Image (cartoon, rainbow, N blue to C red; front, side, top):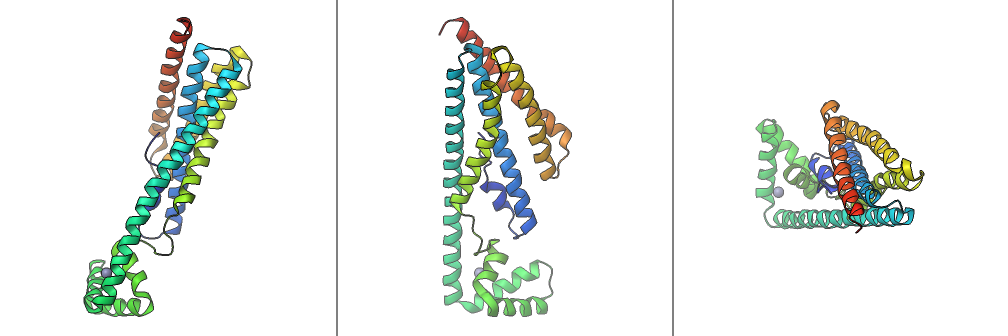
Length: 241
Ligand SMILES: [Zn+2]
């Protein structure tokens, strides 16, 4: 499971771009689904190497799906909560500074705007107008790069991770339990490869990277995972464990 959960990319977009943020969420969802596909495929193919018992496959696959999606959700919840705590602490500091030293804060905002390319006079004028309208919001956005009205909700992030992983994990789970015994592994491998082409391609496109290599790496990683666990499963099955 990667640590690049749903929160990471969303927080990278500091300048409040609606489209950029949406794309980042979409990309995180694709990566979450990819995690679900690879880890569950590795798990069920490994078990299929050892046994043809459908109940065992279903149990292992479902347990893997739930364990993975809950682990992703919990990790995401913790990471976004921490992020949110530090954002709220920074906003509280900013609020206090604005109350205690408004002049210094106006000068700070002016300089930040100058650094962004405005002339001294225009920066001063802009800083004054922003301060009159909503000083805290202006400092949050220009100085901290956060939108105080749109802090990421840890529960939303957790649910998004849970759903993305589950959606991905369902594919290998169904592919291993639905077909008749001899077809299970081939059907799973083919459908997992097809899905990994899709997720590799989408995440590369969403991240504005060339898709060719991303697809190859993604499919290679999935095949490696399934190959190793299948080999281990076959060995354990043959040993009668
Ligand atoms: Zn400030």
